[in-house]
Length: 329
Image (cartoon, rainbow, N blue to C red):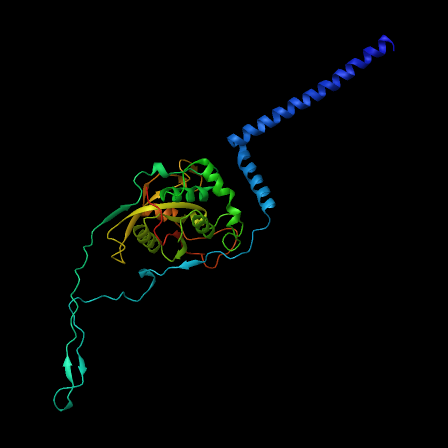
């Protein structure tokens, strides 16, 4: 081989090697840039990445199973009916009953003993919350679509049945396919029925999915359940797109004693905090009292874009405890 041919070959080989190295460098830089873009959500890259991951997860899990799920129980509240509530009249004796006997077979009226009237309970304002330290049981959703596992995590933490670690939230999210059903969530993953099933699996038994015609009726029933069971209620806020954990309330009277007690708001744990929503605005710190204006703005009747839910559409939805479990913290 001549010196000329050797000289001509070397640059081509060096050029090829440089091209390979350049491609590797560019690929590495591209991966690095993409990683930074995803982590910082530059131009929505993070959101697109999460959607891609969700699609892959759905593909691997298969179609949303069409299996039975806990039904939504429709709760009638006093304001739902036009019929007046029955009222007792203390001290009123029922009419005496005729009893056979007496002279000439004439019935003798024997008075029925009058029940001792019970004193009417005092109608006084109530400020009630089962949680003393809201920060101790708060969990922020690790991803902007993980409000449910974060909400469930807080309920279980309040009851002493779980913790607020990132690992536990990932565990809850990782098990969602065990509880999902098409009837509960047409697009899969979390619906209120899946929430009740998840709580039951972790020891918080007795939770029901309930629907109400009015917001005040929903809050009053939730308040009664919290008082009775010392357990939180999950409110399906933002038309069913978000979870709020209700731990207490304020009312003009005790709702357990007065069916017409009016609630002025609720104590809420919002897993969205401290993030800001472009639609719903800034979220509030753990345990914030959300007054009626905030409840009207955030706690809205169920309406989902993925389809119809005949037993829920137009109703205020909540996941409500019915038995006392654990110990509130």
